[in-house]
Length: 235
Image (tube, helix red, strand yellow):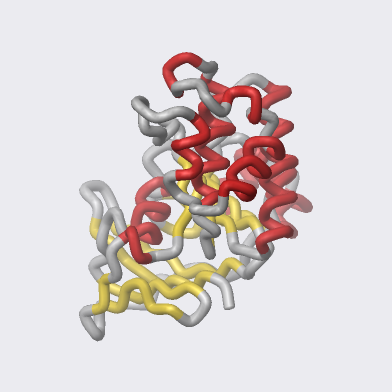
């Protein structure tokens, strides 16, 4: 059970090669410098981009396998996704945005309540704040009853109190639904607060030394590092 991937993808500046496992109920954090391949990794899991080689599977369901020609479209990958740009339908109310992914009205209002935006149910996305839109985007992603949640810098544009509220709710929902979560962030404080494991990458490769340097040489923090990573002799 959980997410397992072993993939490679040729990019303009480097080859991204990665192997990792994320168990149900755990949050795997992807950190690294800008341009390291973090967002590309999320997109490869989601099916928004295609690996050149390898395999991606979730709970025994194969999403991608280059050897067999398997490539399941994004809409069939049981995903919840949240990015920085609040992927909401501008012409629908917040309630209808969340309900678009969920036929259970009780579930819709439970999520709106959990994320503190039930009073905005009939508002359009353009009339509420960025933090409120991001809360709505989280509700929309979770309303799908996803088997995995993919988050790309979901809290970076939010004020500190809102970030803390959403981090706490994310951990609650992760345990409640017992699903794996992959989260990309530049915020190392956030990484250590949320992460069950941390995967530092640089130029598309697992790079523990980058994290050691980013932490100012606090080597004991590397005990949190994820141990499932790509080896240079894969391909």
